[in-house]
Amino acid sequence: MTRGIWKGPFVHPSLLKQVDKLKDKPKKTPIKTWSRNSTIIPEFVGHSFLIHNGRTFIPITISEEMVGHKLGEFSPTRKFSGHTPADKKAAAEGGEATAPGAAPKAAPGAAPKAAPKAAPGAAPKGPTDKKETKK
Image (cartoon, rainbow, N blue to C red; front, side):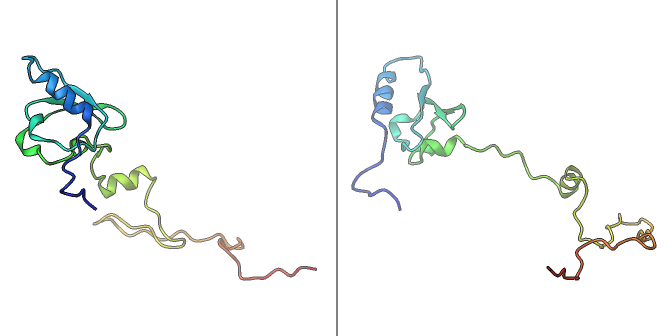
């Protein structure tokens, strides 16, 4: 649910005070804020902010296109390292997980290999269907 239009945009009062103080100064220092839910208003254009993302402060300079958005939209809280290709993921996990008894997949163009046979007289691997009786 969005905020009611009759209420107007939410801007933390301390941000308004700090922006008003910096309007008169020629050198604009960044405003450090934790208020990610504050809406960007036209008075913020041209000012720089340090927005907290939960770990560090992300430097942002406000432009006209940002007006109406929230400050938190411009400082991501999660780091995206990219999608891992399937072959790298399989190598990192120690090979592909296959069903028990299924033959491993061969590389394209490779000669097929024979499946390993169980030693004669060895017990079968896996669960048995025999029910034990209690006495």
